[in-house]
Every structure is written in C-alpha cells, then in structure tokens.
Image (cartoon, rainbow, N blue to C red):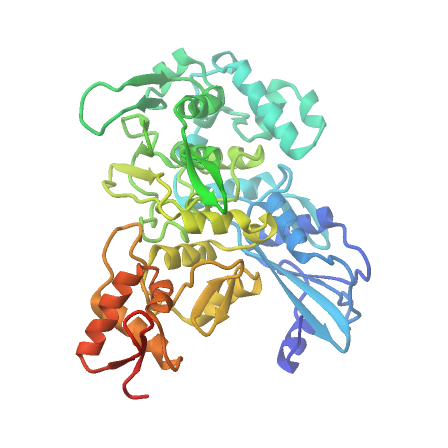
Length: 537
C-alpha cells in the first residue's frame, strides 16, 4: 500500500464518472458479483477503473474502505467472471485505504460477458448490451461469414443432442436457471445464431447434422490423427469428425487422452507425474482453430498427435493484422459469432486470449513455448512440443499458489520462462521483474535473482547449459557473467561459479582458468581449496 502523490489524488477525485470510472464508497463490504458487472460494462466501452473508498458525488472525498481484504482473491474472482485482464492498486491517504481495480478493454470483435450476459452502461444503470451494439462488435474484425444466414437450413438440420450439450454448458457456467426452460428456438435466438431471417452458418458449424454439413458447408470438418513419426504415410489412428462442434468437442480430448503418458520430475525424495498432454491446452488449441479458421477456404482442421507433440493445422492464414510475432497482444476474431458463443457458455478461459493461456501453461509445465513454423497465407500451423525441458523450473512452478499464478500476466510467465530457458537478460529493464518480486515468486540477492523457495540462482546475464534450445553459452557471455559476479565478492570458488552458471564444477574451473590466462583473475590457495579474485581488486 503506497500513498497517493498530490497529482494522482487530484486526477482521481476529478475524474468523470461514467463509462470509464465507477466510484463506490463501500466502507466495509463490496458485492463482488455486482462489481464484476460494472467492470464488464467498462471493458465493453474500452476499459476503465472501479474505485472503492471514494465518494461518488462531487466534491469527492477519500473515506477509505475495508472491503476486499484479500485483493488477489478478488482479482481471481473477477477474471473468472470476465475472462479478461484485471489489475489492482492499493493506495493510502491520511490513513484511509483506497482500492482501484482496472479492467482492460474487450478484444476486437468480442463483447465481454458475465455469466453469459454482456453488460452495458445506460446512464447510471447497467443493462444487457443492445443487440445492435453486439452485432457491430462482431463485425469489427471484418466480414464474419459465420454470422451470415444460411437460407437453405431449418431447425430440423440441427442435432438436438449438440444443442442440449450447449444448453447444459451455458446453464452450468451462468447459473441462470431460466436457460433450462427455454425452447430450442428461443435458446438459439438468445445465443444470436438464429435471426428472423433464418439460421446462421454459425448454427450449422456448432450444431449441424452430418448430411446438412456435407451439403452446405463441407469444409466444416475436424480430422484427428495419431502418428508415431512425422514421416508421410497412413496414420496409426484416424477419425473424421463431420458434425456440429458441440457433438465432437469432448471426443477430441478423449482421443488425445487415450495416448497421454505421464512425465516425471523430482521434488525432494518424490517422483511426481505431469501429463504430457494438458487438457486445457488441447481444448484451447481446438477452440482457436474452430473460431479463427476460414470457412470459405477448402480444407479441414487437422489435429495430429505424436508421442510428445501436438500439431493443429487450420485453413486460412492468421486473421487480418495478426502475425506469429504479435499473436499474444493482437486479438482479432475472424468468426466473432462463434467466439461469442464459446464465451457465452464458458468454453474460453479469457476473452480472445486462448493463445495467451497456451503460452502460460507451457511455462507452468516447463515445456517449450508454442511456435507457428510452417504457417503461411493459406494455413496456420500451431505446434506444441510437450517434453518437460527443465525439471527445476517445473518443481518451482508446482510450489507457487494458484492465487499468485492467477494474477501473473502473460509477460510475467514469459519472463520467468525466459530466465529458466537461459535467455540473455541483460537487455531487459529490471522493473519487469518487480511484479514477480511483489508476488514473492522471485527475490533479489547479491548473486542476482533467486526463486523465493530456494534452489538455483537465476543470474541476469548468464545462460543455462540445459536451455531448451540446447544452444551452448557463448564463452564471452560466461566470462562477463563471472567477472560481474566477482566484482561483488572478495573471492569466489568453483562451487560458487557452478551454482551461478548452473554448470558442473569442472566446467566452472575451465571458465575461470581462461580468465586467469587472460590475466584478469588471480588464484590463491591449493588446487583443492582454490579461491579466485579479480586482479584489479
């Protein structure tokens, strides 16, 4: 908790309440579900802040609030509800506590929802987003083919079982018992896939029977294959899934999980398992393919499983403006209506950020980051290499509480993973590490950066020899890391250097001998008890 600066306090007390600010006096307790609705409405307007502990009527005053004594848990609740990023700041003014929750803007082409309802600000009231506005949002990412009307189909062309799977998911996610009583027609209308003019292509993709799909949209197919090698030839197992998405979504995971072996890592004296194929990652990869593929381009979605790898190929290049390099920050929904249905029933973890979740989970399980090698203008190829590459990192991640993991940003995950993968940290602003330090996941020491639960020293500027890409550390980088370390110590031993660089003592001895040969380092003591110091010292 830090005090307001004079400028910050002035800006806050004079901010205009409306689409981007909401002030609540709330001295003791805040209804977090009601607060989530306000954050939802602000996100749908471009983002905003919910301020607790400040009066809402002018002239505003800081009165303080004792609500949300565990802000991390509150943040977790908000993110579970909204599926978009929410941050918080805790301030103090003259002994009064003020909380500010800040929600990011909704993704392009997708409204943010709470329990299946996209909330909207109408004056001082919260109302469900008008249908006209929802349509406008879906169209933001360009023309949405799936929102077009397929005039040739009727309700008889949809699979009632697939519709009921959707109903059940929506009911469980929202808790809205009204959904259970809706007629099929009204359910589809409320999901925006049925208009007065008829059923959309989205309804066919999500709920269609096999024959209507073959006739009206033969490209809407997912093919699962299991292969023992990447050599061309027939797959070891194959299943063609030409049916509505809600009919086969669980089936894909069943097929993958049949060949899901555990990998193991050591935690003290225990050998603990971690599945090769993570269910969340597999489902998110499929959801991304179905919601972003080009349905007007020929070809099927392929899900290819190998012993420790998953490759998902979907027709059509990246959505306009999205590349492999900006995919974690640029969220465009090619098929906004389908993505909105997924969001409505809670299938997506965070709005427009399924790929972020896949990257984060890769770091949590100490596996290589996903890549898009082989993608082009006609196909997106997502490759997940799923071998655990850093057991020390995995052991560390398993010890971090869910509350802390849930408030880490994708950048936090990538930074932590980059350290363990041995990437050069010298060009990174030290402030980027601060959030991890605030969460007590890392700590600053005289040696560099360490996990707060002990273990390997993460020295900025050094690289690890067991990095995932298996590239050796450049000698010059090793030398700089050792010299920088020695500047802070009167002497060092090979054991200290081995821990610093995460290499064997023999390798550390070879490095320090080269520095000795260059007349930069001097040795004292016997070979067994040798100590090394900078000659300049």
